[in-house]
Length: 489
Image (cartoon, rainbow, N blue to C red; front, side, top):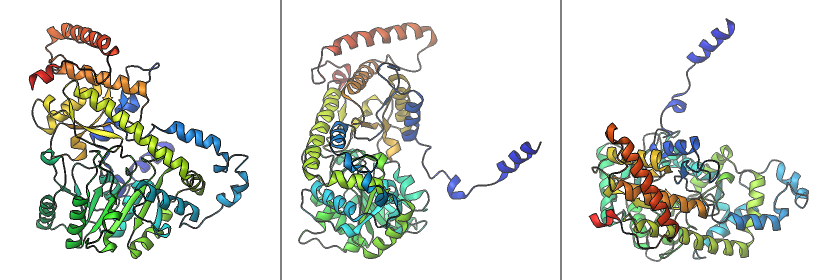
């Protein structure tokens, strides 16, 4: 009886409005796809018909290089016989500015990724628990509840969580579309700014992701200069999220906002410029939670450093990261190999998709590509996109993320992550996409099949899959393939 009373009392105790609002953004197909994978994960032997995770932007292509380095440098860890002498020094309290050697190494790595065309001051590096914490820290520093940041669409779904959930800040979209490959223009920036003002929303900043997630594209110098001019004219802040800067695998090269503001003839108040960085994507260390705020504004840097005590990077992690980043010969090898392997994996998928008439946005960076399935929609609506996404999740067993979850203005685009799997899994994933496109375009996989045709439809689908499997086993992903979808266009 006493336990029942206690249970009823506990149920009536309310939580905070911040904790219980839906600002975290988990009610989204982006996160629903992850849940579908978690409940039925693919494994080549234990669950070969499970869901393949293609919704996670994780870089696993060079873990073998990292593992080799770790085995050759046991002193980098304080938990080995070779590194144990540093245990007490690392284990006790440290200044929340971060280890000086760590900040030096991160600054040098950021310079190297940018081709040594710019210099970074280690004393301006502020630690954070991943890029998530870095984004939120800047939102707290730069804006008040109800203020807004302009952000070009499509954009990373978790920005809604990272910048808005606990701060009360808004994200206001700058609508971009495929007519110019989703490039942001001065006109689109001005239109978004004007709409925000008409809605009595105060714009405090501009959130830029370069290279882009989900597009996999880099911004050229002229566009970056236009953005800098825009934020300078409006006197609003610019947050440049550059966490994919070392994932560029083809021309054109990545250009950092830090390079633009140092160019001759560029007029800019540097107090408005802030960079978010991490090692989650470039080195494949998301579990280490190494996030960085780099601000040219002294007041922001001071405020962010105070806030960093809520999301510090462990000194053990700092010690290890410092050790690996300080080995410049290894880092050069890693960046080169990573670029080479990303290019190969990107070509494998995009080349394979082209053989069944599926296009992708031309891209040269990131751990994913932007796939165009607009031809497969029954109508150009978000509802039709959602229907197609459900078929891909439930029948094809691939977790790809629909464009609507990235706030894309055009239904039918999907982000496909390709760097979080081995070569064999990649082949299985491509084979599934091939079969799906070829069969779906014939209407075989229509979910609303009349009951009396169900068995024959399933048999036709099964036989078609089997024949296509046999055919694809002897083909490279770049071999010509006759597609009914190609013939229909």
